[in-house]
Length: 328
Image 1 (cartoon, rainbow, N blue to C red):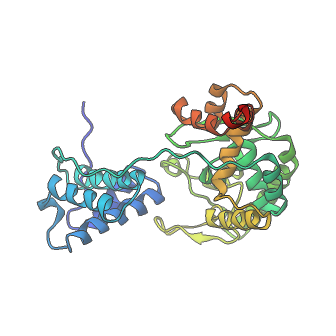
Image 2 (tube, rainbow, N blue to C red; image 1 turned 180 degrees about the vertical axis):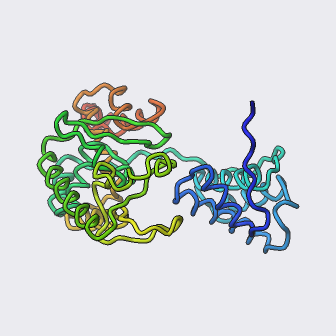
Image 3 (cartoon, one colour; image 1 turned 180 degrees about the horizontal axis):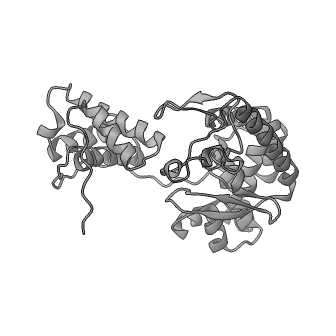
């Protein structure tokens, strides 16, 4: 039996209808913000003159082509805009778009920027406290930025020595060995989280956001210590969707700024960021002789071709080459 399609409240404004459908399908808050932004840009492109239900593939094609030719957006950005508009027509307006073929943004495959082991050490030395521990996990476990900030207490298994990434990119889980150098810092962090959580409970709070409706299935789970964020924010905040006061995780921007500053203090002139630590994790493992399939699994890559890009920056392979000039 086919599942009945969710129809938003047609009495609401279009953007409110879009938010209603996004929340019904459990899209993340970041995706909600992104899709709503693209829908607004699409409406603005046609100066809000015509309701999108009276438009179709021709207008979508014009907008996407404009992004590629006039705004020069990347292929991934254009694809994100396409996904948002397909969502608008299919899920919100209940209209099927016909075939269209916009001008495509050029897709380039760039060699990742990688730190040497000495550069990693220098960057970490210019960090301290929570930000240093988070950066250690980015490099020592190959985590993506948001995977790191969204870690919860239950994802850390000190006794077995594993860290678990839940619902990572592509909706997959994976287990990663915890670096021995980070174990003591993680234990201290868990103790701090417990103290913060106990203080929140005493003040009548202590709840965190639960994914995919678990708050309905397990009403009290949001106040369990196991579900608390490993890197909680300093202050409680009102959830923009539910209006409930909760303690969220640290903002990713704080870690990004700290790492950027550490890179500058380390005297590194490469165009680097938090993600460079993840790139360095994969590259250094391959240089040590790790099997590429193992690295693929640790990185959470769906296709081994994504992992193979790190073979282009292996210093050991490059160091063994002899320039034709030196053979003369």
